[in-house]
Length: 248
Image (cartoon, rainbow, N blue to C red):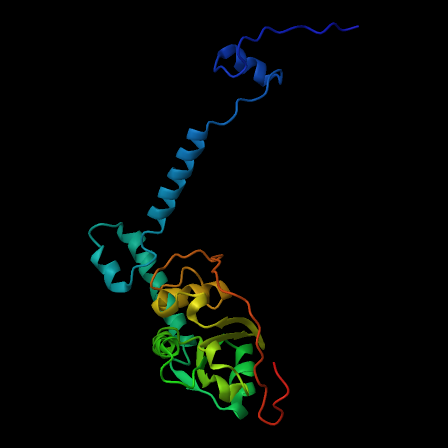
């Protein structure tokens, strides 16, 4: 019968050669990882990632200005990457304007069109005094010019949905694959009258209409899993003028 042997252990957490031997044979557990070491490793990785991505938000002119500071092969690699991105964007940018909507065309111009690209609809106020609606109209134009692969549309709320309350405008409807993916009721869910392009870009990232590293963004490098504080209220939208009681 084997008799257990009591191994002398003064301090199992001490960094000694004897404790290393005991750990190797499983007699005492491994030392817990130092929080300082974990933090230092995380900081080092973050710095490496920042250095690796230091050219991600540079356009072609900015890349040319870095010729004396960066490795020529590395710089040329990024230049070719950026040119390929611009070429792709140019090919898929087929909208580049805000499309006014009429009720009879809603199904074709929005629901059907969303099967090929993201479609965003701004339901505007019928009152010229609605500051948020006027602001979003201006932002809509800028976004349409900037992101030509996304279709931006606009229509008065009460002309789109009979009896739609003006207090719910502006309303943003985001369509993709033939369905409404997100609705935003007034800009209070974003930044109110302080809403800007960056707020809407975050919304586009959140819904998958844009990637977080899109070079056109005001703030490139936003994480692709960015989660906004946008609500998920649901309202109907008309499929056609022939039957006002059918909604998508």
